[in-house]
Image (cartoon, rainbow, N blue to C red; front, side):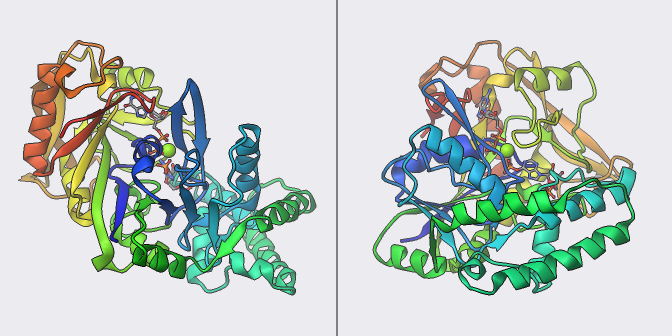
Length: 424
Ligand code: GDP
Ligand code: IMO
Ligand code: MG
């Protein structure tokens, strides 16, 4: 059976966690395929909020297998904290949470290297979540990384020491003021490794292959968003993995011709956390309103998210790169009360009007060209049926469908599982 994908189409935080949780009842397996604890996926149900970083968002469903794929990078310390939270809520994950032996491990020194690199960059910093993501993927592609399968071997600590010593020399080389106590960090790390070892490690590509052969349904859960993709995002202000559809193939071992539906998820406006270009960013009252009403603070770092109008040039690009087959629009409720909404449909670039995403989208190169659309006043948060949605919101959705030529099948009107409207 084909593997379906759910991918963020903007700069992350589109609401992937919520929608994966909503869709989980349709799937046997939920699989993360890239990223790591830089992700913060929020789920709200039964009056409670849960934030997951590495664990797939299907974990609260008893009958679902949750797989952490080979493309993911795992910080055992953060992973243990996530497990502790699940324990507090009596979530039974021992049998249902599987980890790929080929996933790479984030060492304490990877986190320190991330901090040293960002400090050394000064004003040019990426705005990393400082979870060690970049340095861990660098060691992966540099063929120096430590994988989950390694910690089952007797001599892995020698490999660890060699790598951690090399990292320390690199941190010294940066010559920046980073305070740390490595003994303390390592004690915490090795204790968390023991917790990790109590889980089930598998040869995940074989597992996925067998699951497909026995007609099990699989949903691959993306982290971050297309504009943070290492190849197709706003480089260098990106993360260090392929967040787009191709990343699901390499991050799980799924062949391209085995991909089924591609759900593309986007906010009804745009947000970004961290540095980097953002053509439709607002610095006025409207941007402030989006941030306040949408509670736009990072689920991992708590940093305020930058807010702006929807950018259809960027969204179209993301749909193309991913082969999106269905769109899901989040946070429609946040736009209630705006008299007029703006949607960027083209860019003025070097004096010319263009509708594709060019190499340089920095402020000095791009002026967004907006189409104005009538807003709506109604509070959407109590609505459950498509028939209740205001006419102006339907107008907004239909405008986007026409521009992107892809159906919007779900409109989300609040953070709760129940605040989800299926359109067709
Ligand atoms: P993810 O990283 O893509 O899973 O998204 P995050 O969890 O980082 O950020 C999405 C935020 O929006 C979370 O606080 C969600 O609870 C919240 N959220 C999700 N969908 C909606 C919605 O339709 N309306 C509102 N108001 N909030 C939402
Ligand atoms: P989810 O899965 C939003 C951003 C960081 C920074 C850049 C690089 O919750 O949507 P990194 O820590 O990867 O080196 O940071 O990417 N970033 C995210 N922004 N949502 C995320 O994940 C993000 N993961 C990383 O803010 O700009
Ligand atoms: Mg998030």
